Amino acid sequence: MKSEIIKEIQQQMNPYLTHGSYMKLTKVLTNVLDEIEIVTPYKNDVPFDNSDMLEIFLSAKNIEGCSENTIKYYKQSLNKMFKEINKRVDNITTEDIRHYLSNYKESNGISKTTIDNNRRIFSSFFTWLEEEGYILKNPIKRIHRVKTPRVVKETFTDEEIEKLCDNCTNLRNRAIIEILLSTGIRVGELIRLDIDDINFNEKECIVLGKGDAERIVYFNARCKIHLQQYLDSRTDSNPALFVSLRKPHYRLGINGVEFMLKKLGEKTGVNNVHPHKFRRTLATKAIDKGMPIEQVQKLLGHMQIDTTLHYAMVNQSNVKISHHKFIG
Image (cartoon, rainbow, N blue to C red; front, top):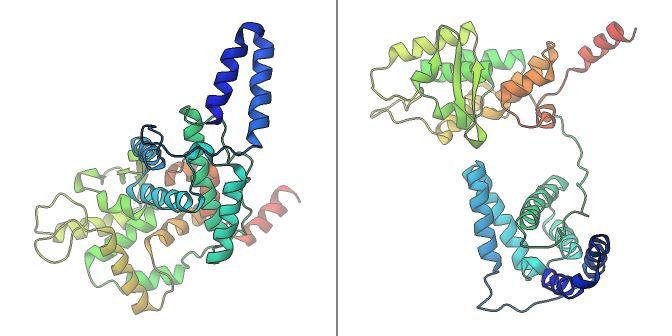
């Protein structure tokens, strides 16, 4: 509604304004109307329904390569916001969103991290609306990132890794652990691997990451040996690298990998055994041993280097050694 008001004023004043004064008028109108709440009743003949905008937005995210889980999370978070604010997207103000986030945090006991995740989702949605011309001004721009405490997440110790490897009861599970440790790939990337993706001569494989982006990852000699032993033991014709142990040997899924690792953790007494912990362990060890952060970023397939820094927790003793070496 605000955009229509501004356009109408612009059209009527255009014959009397220079380009500079036209731009100044636009800026003044935008700033003034931003402080005023204009509520427009829904009309059946106006194709500007929140659910319509959401579906178009999610379609755009799908084309950009967002995962099914990400799109589902976006949809749930935005629908909750729509239900509470109960306004059309072109009428939602900065104060509406601030009030919603504050109430959501207090009434549900939600962490700062979850609140900031919601803020980022809203920012993505309203930025898209603004860029597409559906709204004149983005109400989320003045809502800043929520400061969250940085939690040092656990990695596997060398002793824990040995326990996990020694207690594998079959060749497949050992091969899974070795490739997770050696490559740092995501579990979703692991289960999509085919046998043909593996280059044993170069000790590398091609994985399909987020956004359907391909990248090359590398594995060590120990991983190569266990992969070959596992593949040599197979009698099925499934092209998947990892399959179920029982016939008809379907491609192994994410739940299957997570369940296997959970049971192995319970058996060995190792806490929090899940696929992502192997990825974090690889990143931490790589940086500890001096691999440049830019190369770790490429290895893990991160678009932003800040994401890599969240995964890798540098050993404090190595920081001390480096300080003596470079600072004296």
